Image (cartoon, rainbow, N blue to C red; front, side, top):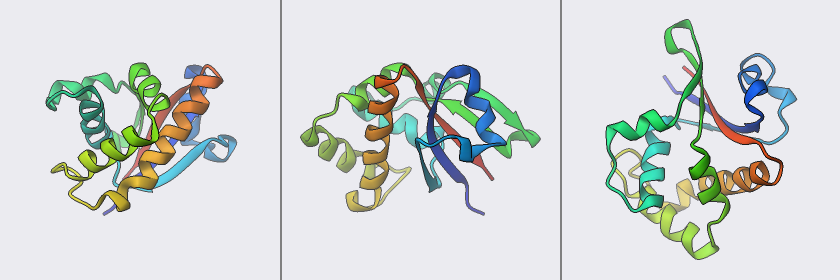
Length: 138
């Protein structure tokens, strides 16, 4: 079973509406297998810290339906700012390090589109005073 993972930008008061009306959110990217666990490992790399399970708490859950079959998490504001500020060289470095994690264990080329979308969405969110969210569905 694959986990659907949509990353999108919204204002806090509208973020949970994504679950029932995703087409109303133009700024989004769709993937599979991306959860707060993988994003927290990216966040630890960006901060130059060793990953710790407590980092998962930095991705607050705003919506949980059917015992967790559908979820909405907000990315930390500092992570969004950090992603928005990454230079091309930093994107390369972060992508390579993230690809090598136990959670992903893939080639950098496989995960690069995700990092590029996270950077793009973070920049757009920063420009429009919104935040970045992760919607998951099992």
